[in-house]
Image: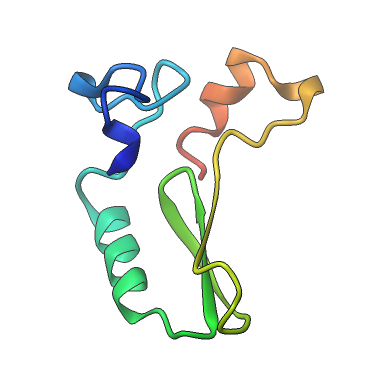
Length: 91
């Protein structure tokens, strides 16, 4: 939700946080999974989030980060708008 702050979002009124099209999971199952994952996270677990969607919970330790977030991880060779848009629905 912090990604939609007008100070950092590209077009917060359209729920676009970056890349002219990327939106947080404002509705639907991705949101529910994300919130449920956060509510059920144990003290020795870390949640991995990719482009606003929970992708895994890993057993770590109490001093480890609670959440790791990754967005737009394209290797420069494939960092084109065509590739970026092609991966949109796969993540």
